[in-house]
Image (cartoon, rainbow, N blue to C red; front, side):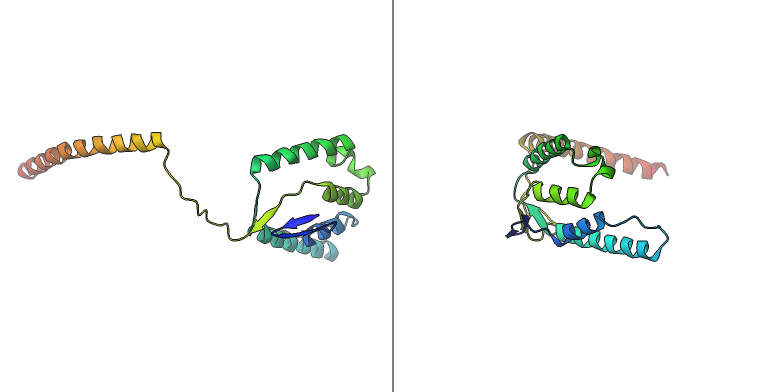
Length: 160
């Protein structure tokens, strides 16, 4: 099940995941070959597109809950031998990644522009009180300082 925004489909992967599955099963290429450079460019474009999509999505659940589920799933996979600890060279990477995508945690998302938080921020009471107290002390101190500064300034001018 792929969940993004309000769209939920069963047993289908996001276009990015499908591309990554294809790349996972490809043979190793010489880094200087045109095929390798084309693959690198394609992977970079896939990454940029995925980051752009992620920038317009936000989970509907709280992060600690998501991370707790992810940790439980990671421990489950480790017990099953999935992932780097499972001996990648002995397994078909595409089938392993596909199994992980099918069995992975689902994070319901909502779409929108989340570049700025719209929540009103408030100063905690303790901090607000300390700022108020500092402000009151500052006002008293400023009056005394202004008088002293004015006198010092006049004396400085006379001395010159």
